[in-house]
Length: 394
Image (cartoon, rainbow, N blue to C red):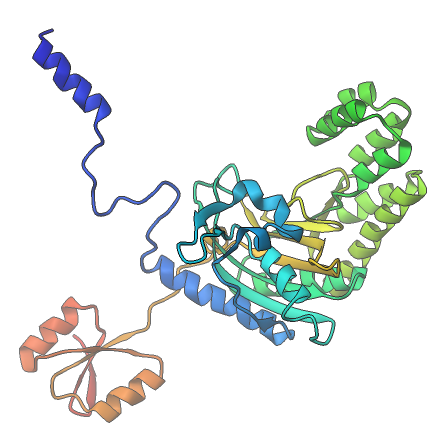
C-alpha cells in the first residue's frame, strides 16, 4: 500500500461524514402525517377524558433550573436529565425527562392554596438521556397524564387508574393489562427484619431476577416469607388471596394491606378490568412511595403508561398516571384525514366556511374549469367547490 493510499484511508476513517440536512441526533425523529395527526387527535381525546373527570390542564415549562427540578421527586431523575447553561442567569438548567416532578413542585408552590383534592392533567414533550425502556430507541418522549393531589387512600389510587382505563377505552385500545406493584413492600420488610446491608442487596437482586433458589440462599430467616411473596403474583384475585395469608411484620403488613385494598377499590370501579399483582416488583421511577401500576397491551412488551403514589415537594400525598403516546398510538388505527374539498378560484367563500364547519378541509386553488378539476385530483380532493356548487370529483 502506498503512503498516499494509506493517508486517504486514514482520512476516511477519522473525518466526519458529510452533514445531511435531514440528519437528526440519535433518538430524535420527525413525525409526519398521518402519525403526527394520530398523536395530536389521540392526545386531545386523552385530555378530554381527564377533563370530564375534573382534571384541569396545566402546562409546566420544558426547562427548569437544575436545583429546582432535581429537588424532591426530581432527585431520582438526575441521571436521565440533559443539562444546559442558561446564558442569561449563568445557572444550570434541566430539560425535563418527566413531567410529574414539575406537578409536585407546582402543587407545593403556586398551587399550594388551591382547594384539595387537586386534580390536574398535562401533555407535553420530555427529553431523556437514554431510552426509557429497553425496547425503545427514542429519547424525545411524549407524555400525557393526570395527578390527584391531597388524598392518600385506596379509593384515590383507584380513581386515577379507572380514569386511565376509560381513556384507553375511548381510544379503542383493547386487551390492556393493569399490572399493580408495591415497590416499598420488600425494602420495608427487610428493614423491619434488620437484615444486614450486604445480605439485603443479595436478596433484592434475587427477587428482581425472580430467582427463588437465590432468595432461599440469601434470605435467612425471611427466606420462606420472601418466597411466598415471590409466588404471590399473577391475576389480581389470586395474588391478593395469597398475599393476605402471608405472615408479615406489622409495618410490611400495613403496606401489603394497602395494596390489597387498592385492588378491591379498583375492582369495584372496573369489574371487568384485567389486573395482575406482583408484590416484589420494583418497576417505576424511584420517587414512587406506594402502589404503582404499569399498563401493557396483552401480547406486547412496550409499556403504554405507568403511574403510582408519591409525595409532592412538601410531602403532600399524590398519585398519578402517565401515558406514553409514542407507544400508545401504535396500537390505534391512523386518525383519518378530513375529507378534502378543492376551492376553485371562483368558489363562494361563505359556502367554503360552511363546509369547514361541517368537518371538511378546504384546499385553496387558483384555477377554474378543467385545470381546477385536474388540480383537485392531484391534491386528493374528493369534491370541488365552484361558485356555490360543491360537486364530487369524478
